[in-house]
Image (cartoon, rainbow, N blue to C red; front, top):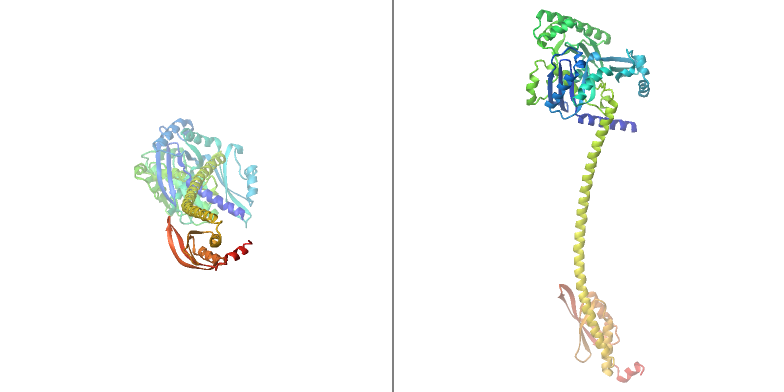
Length: 550
C-alpha cells in the first residue's frame, strides 16, 4: 500500500514539475541554428519564441567543430534577439553520432536490471561498442515485458562524450544551460506531440529525413522505434543543395532514395508482421522540397507522403507569423519544435509514459536533475511557507479580533457592574449612617424608666429586627399602642422578613404592612414601606421591675 501511494505521489510531482518546466529548444545543424519555445496546456500549444540564423560558408559536418566560435556568436545573437528568459535548453545531436538499438533480454526484475546496468555487465554482453563504455553517454529504458516468452525489450541509445561536448560547449558559451540532449530523429518524433491528428490511430507511422547531412527512416509502431540510415552519395548531396538542380538528375536521386525506403518498409513489415505503412512524414532542409516530394510521391504511389509541418496546429502569435512564413519549407522546424516540447523531467514523469519521447544523453543529467529537483522543492517550500505565514497571520488577526470583541464586551459589563457597585455603596453608606444615628438615639435612651423604658425596649426590639437590605427612615409614635415604621428596602422579601421578625417580639403584639411603593434613588429602584405595629399591653411598673430583677 505504501509503495503504491509513494508511486502515485511521485507521479503527481513528476507531472507537476513537467508542466512547470520552461525549456527552449536549440537545433544546431551545419547550415543553420534554430531556436523555439512553446507554452502548452491540455494538448494546446502556443509558439512563444522562434528564431533562426544561417551559417555562412559552412564546410559540411565538420564545420560545427572547426567553426564553433561562429555558432556560439550566432546562438548568442538568437537568444538576445528572441528575448529568451529561461536558460534551460534542449539540444539535439545528429543521428550519425548516436547508437540506437532495441535489445531483447531475458526477463529481469527492476532490481536485477539496475544492478546489471550499474556494473556495466549488461551492455558489455548485450551491446558491442567500439570503445570503452566510459567514453559514452548511455540512455536506456524498458519498452516491453513479455512474461509468456520470459523476455523483455530495452531501448538502448548511446553517443560518445566527445561528440556531445561539441554541441554542449556551443550552448553553454552562448549563455544557456543544457538540460536535455536528444537525438535528432527522436526530436522530430517528439514534434508529433504537436500533431495529434497524425497519432490518433495505432497504425505504424514512418518519418524520413532527407538532406545533405542526415538521411534516415524512423518507423514508429507501439513503443519500439526502428531506425535505419539511407545512403546518399556526396554527388547527390551537392545536387539537392543547389537552388536550381537539374530536374532529371533530381528525379534520379529521389528515385534511388525512394527505392531504399520501399525496401526498408517491406523488410520491417515482413519481420514484425504488421499492416502496410500508409503514411510517411517527410522532413528536410533542402530548398527544392516541393519537387522532391512530387518525385517521392510518384515513386511511392501506395503511401501518403506529407511534408511534416509541426506548427500546423500550433497557435502562432502575429509577431512570429512573418518569421515562420518566411521559410517555404515548414519541415525545417520539425526538430527544434520537438526539442521545445522536451522537459528535464526531474521526478521521472516520462518513466510512467514510456516510448522514445524522453531520451536524454546529457552526460551529467543525474546531477542536473538533483539540482533542479532541489530548486523545485525549495521554491515550493518557500511558497508553502509564505502561504502558511499568511494563513497564520490571518488566523492570528481574526483570533485577535474575536478576543478584542470579547474584551470590549467584558469591559462594558465591568463598567456597568462598577456603576452598580458605586450606587449600592452609596446606599449602604446612607443606611449605615442612619443605623448609627438610630443606635445613638437608642443609646441615649438607655436611662429611661417606666413607660419610657418600655418604649426603649420597643425601639431596641425594632432595631434588632431590621434585616440586611432594609433601612429605617422613621418611627412614628403619637401615643396609645400604635407605632408606624417607615423604611426603605432592596426587595419585597426583606420587608416581609422584617414584619415577621417584629411580630415575634415580646413588645409587639401584631405587625402589618400599611403601604408599599417604588421610589427611584440615583436611577436605582427601591421599595418604600410603612408598617403598623400594635404594642403589647404594658405591665405595671412594679411588675416590670420584678421582671427586670429589681
